[in-house]
Structure formats: structure tokens, C-alpha cells
Image 1: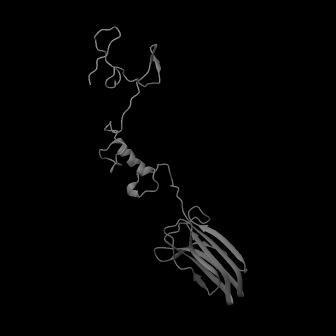
Image 2: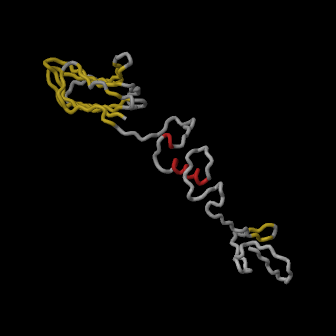
Image 3: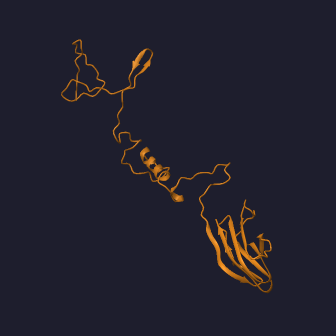
Length: 230
């Protein structure tokens, strides 16, 4: 379209227009702008700029798919969609998440852990010189809690003592915790084993709970055992 404005002084000199003029009219569309600012005593109002979707090829269009890699050539919108998919859509696999480096002064990463029942034994009469829980796999745990309850005894001068042991690579069981020698029927014992706990010991790979019953005339103790790990 060609257009020649009519100057106010009636001359034929064309006047350049600063905004779009609809076809078949001599009236330019009003410009939107602002906010105004004062510079050198003059009040200036910058022109508002409109850019339609996809006009800026580097910025991209609303319909652009998320980028398929971090280093490829993509529009800003495509890369931003990839970023949102990695950071703001919940739990991701390691391959699809953003790699981070742990701060050099951070000693531990907080994590949510659950407690598992590693070994339980319902109330039962135990006799004989030595019995144990059997080997317990503890490599995936950091600590254990031990709860023991005895309720009855029989025999002549019966005693019972408990040991929590770590199995070494040599097959020998090393004592991490042991109770006192118990002589009365009713006892409640609770303790914990692990770094920073009541008994500050590493659990290793394999542990067990062992107990020894002493006395004469077929001594027995009725007890219940619980070992929890996390």
C-alpha cells in the first residue's frame, strides 16, 4: 500500500507516519505507550512493542516441543519446557534429572528413611545354654533398636544374658553390646546400636542377637525379642 499524508500547511511534502494506517484511510492508528519519564526537561513516552507468537525465531513459538537435549540448537521456549520437565514435575530418574554437586561444607544429605522389623520373636520359653537369632543382613541399614522383655523363669538359680554381635570377614562374631546377667523373672531392656547412638558401633554387613541361659535343674526364661533397623 502507498500512502501520502497531507501536511497541516497544505504543502505536498509527504509526512512519514509513526504507526500503521488502515487501507483506504488517512488516519493512523493510535500508538499505545508508557510509562512516561522525564529526560532533559522533556516528557518522553516509549512506544509499546507487540510481538506475535513465533515472530522472534530465537525465542520461539508457544507450540514448540520441549528440547530433546541440553546442548542442541533449540528455541528459548523449547529449552525452557525441557527445564520445567526436569525440575518441576516431581520425582525423576537419574538419567532425566538435573545433575547437582553437593556443597563442600555439607556433611550429610538429609533423607527420609523408614524403620523395618529386622527380627521379632513372640513370647516364648527359652532354655539351653546358648541360642541366637540367626544371621541378620544389615548392610543397608545404619542403626538398630533392640527391645527385650522377660516375664518368667524356672529352674534353680536361672540367669540370662544377651549379646548383639557383628560378624567379621573371618567368620568370628564380635560383641557390640551386651546386657548384664539377669537373675529376676521380669526385665525390660531397650538399647540402640549404630553411629552416634547408645552403642556407637558400625553395624557391618551381618549381625545377630545371642542369648545365654544359665542355672541348673533345666533353667528357662520366657522372653520376647524385637530388633528394628533403619
